Amino acid sequence: MDSDRRSAPVERLEVVDTGRRRRWSEDEKLKIVLESLQAPRQVAATARRYGVSRSLLLRWRRSFRPEPRDTAGQPGFVPAMVVAESGPPPCPVAPANSGGSIEIEFAAGARMRITGTVDAATLKAAVAALADGRLR
Image (cartoon, rainbow, N blue to C red; front, side, top):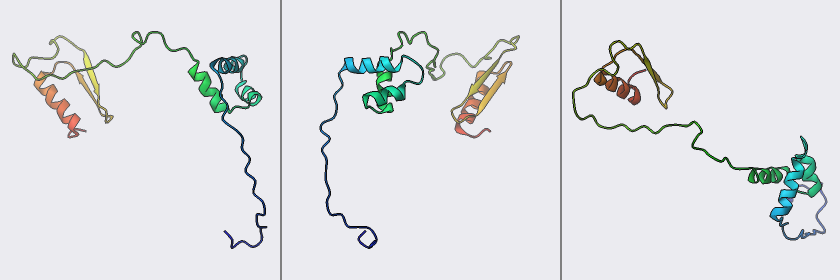
């Protein structure tokens, strides 16, 4: 860095201590958050008024957001369990007069659609082949 002769050398360097971090009480934070919610587009103006960053104010707003009351009623994934076959020999998956279909989507993005009647052994072999990547 001393190879640049055009700039003046530093003669005096002053370090200014800004003090400790501000400590906002929960009541003060709540007051600021409520003020930022008064009208649209008030986050930046409120943050400037109190000398905090927008990201900190947004973090405070998220922390004061009410939590969802009941997550049991929300849609989600149902856990599935694969068990070993035991018992009677394989039988058709659906009744012969059924015209239904089933679609299986694998994590790799592959899909398998089965329409009509298929015996369990054939279905099991096809699913295993698709899951192993042998079928495309």
